[in-house]
Image (cartoon, rainbow, N blue to C red; front, side):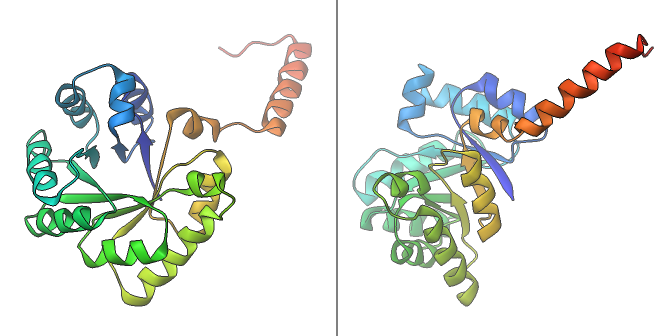
Length: 217
């Protein structure tokens, strides 16, 4: 499974990238706002850090403007993935941009039917939003599983990018049902290391070691 980090925080991206925990990055207008920086500037810096795909999102509502914005964003770096919404205009933009050789991430997917359309339009990635479905008492993970089954049935090459990740369980469950990629905030990815029994075991080892009165090195 590939790990994308969902942030525009350059310091957090660099820390995870240095550990080999970043295969790509996803951003959106909300994350750009939170960074307080110019979109082109911060996106270029992220692309210089990470060798994998970096999603940069269009903000236009109609296909022609999405295509124009997408081409502009793609000029920032060779690893830019143009992010478009799962609307009819977004699918039109996806078709054009992907046909011209650009990576495209179709975002805000909430149904298997939408995921089929994105794959047919040539999307590089489809981003189903797990957490937002869970918020309205629908099963976000079931959507990932349904898309996996459908894509495998027809050998669609679009990669399933599990998004709106809220917890470590979301990551492990997405891995279990076959998501190609997850994108999660840095804190959630770092939280994967935590376990109460690890902490308990380490405390016991440290206590026993202190009783030996020894030092290493």
